Amino acid sequence: MRLCLVSPFSFSAANTGGLHVNILGDKFSKSAQMLKKPQNLAICGMLLALRIVIGCFANVTLSFIPQAKLGFSFLPIAIAGILFGPVAASAIGALGDVICFFIVPPGAYFPGWTINGLLVGMLYGLFLFETKRFLPSLIICEVVIGVFIEIILGTLWLYIQFSSAYFVTAGFRGIKTLIAIPIEVFLIIIFNKTILSRLNKTIIRR
Image (cartoon, helix red, strand yellow):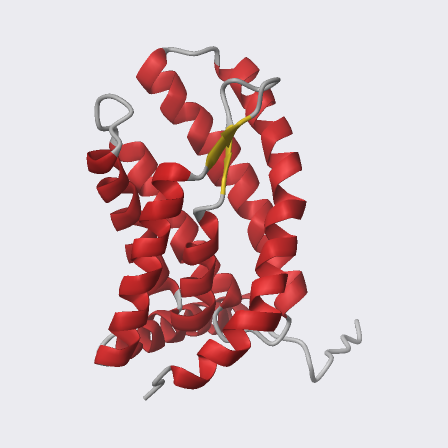
């Protein structure tokens, strides 16, 4: 006969899975509720405008990585994710990409980049909205975005668009991601400690 010891703090896989689903659903629900307030919508509108301006006119091409650019359009998307959650941040990420395309068209429209914008916003919202462990959540979020969105999906879109060599392009984008992640983490922390703490007081949550 075996004696099994079960910790009172342990959860079964089914329980933890259900807990995670509930947390994610709650974040989407709260995020959608916040967008019903005109004051919150006005702030989101300003963040969208900022995303468009930065996305269209504030990109830096790295001379040693011609296939990749460093940009700062992540900032308003991350701010939206922190303040308003995944629904608002996803909308700003996707709409910002579409509007930027019409203002400064780089060529034929490709929906993959809009999907990236939507996913980036969703991830910022899910990881950073109402989190109690901001720094670990931010670092994990940036790594997930860097690996799955920037390297895997971004390289796939370039392969579909231009038939570029997948693994060569992925290598270049990986270098760019390694450079970008610490910069993005630093900037988001600075904004969170200075501007967002004040802006948070003007947001209507209920």
